[in-house]
Length: 197
Image (cartoon, rainbow, N blue to C red):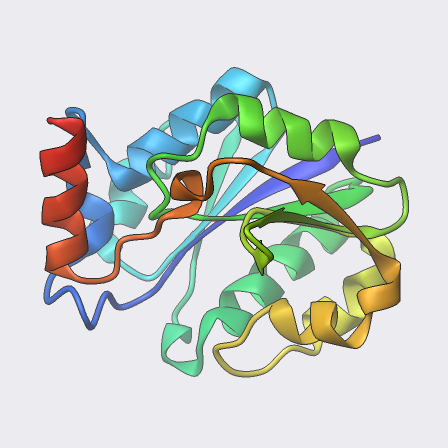
C-alpha cells in the first residue's frame, strides 16, 4: 500500500503578517520540522507545494525523496495546491493513498502520524479526531482522484469529507494540542513560551 505524503505550504500567512513557514520552533523552521518528521517515517515520496520563491529554492534539492511544486495560483485557495499535487502524482507516481499535511502543526508527533496510517482503512477516507473535532493530516484513497482534482476555493478536502461521512474511518487522538496550528503572532508567541525554544 503506497501512501504519498503531501505538504500544503502555499498559504499567504495574511493574519501572521510574515511568512509563518519560516518561523522557528526548537531551532528549525516549521516547514523543516514537518519535512524531517516525514523523512523519519520513511515515506517513499513527499510532495511539498509552495508559493514562496525563497522556500522553493531552499527545498527543491533538499532531499531526493522531496519533490517541490511551485503553486503560481495560490491566491485561488488551498484547493489549487491539492490539485497540483494530485495531478502530478496521478501522472508520475503509483499511489494508493494521499496523506495531506499542513506545515504549521509543529507539535504533531511522529507516533500520531504512524497511528493514523496504521488505523487507516484500505479504501476509506481517514480523519484524525480529538474532542469531537476533525483535524489534519487526512488520508484520501486514490478513488477520490476526480473529486480532489475538482476542488475549488479555500475549504480544501473538507468539502469531500462532509459529502462522504459514511465513507470515513475516524482515528481518535487523545491530545488535541498536537493539532494546534499557528495563524497569528500571539499563537506563535504562546507556542514558544510554553515549549521554550
